Image 1 (tube, one colour):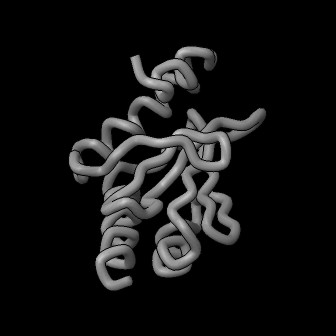
Image 2 (image 1 turned 90 degrees about the vertical axis):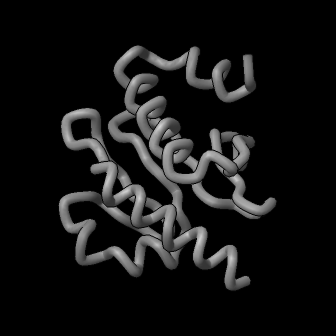
Image 3 (image 1 turned 45 degrees about the vertical axis):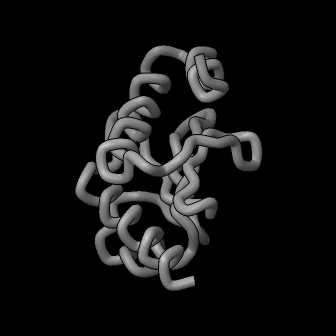
Length: 114
């Protein structure tokens, strides 16, 4: 059992299921990405560099794809609360898989170009 499994296992069922969905999407698109912990949250690294992290909070869940991804997709994120490098969503309004895949694609391109 990984440390991520332990983190997610401590969450209420609805939040855990949604974060597991995020986890599976990352694995689907970038199976070579490595799970880690960043700032106390589950995260992924790609080529040894930060790709994305995710977590649940009292009234929302968040993904942290970095500033460039959020800025680049701002027009597609109008239904969500955003801040610098963060996209907030809820169980009732989950983050759509194609949108998350696009965030990941932007991050991977940034990592490759760095």
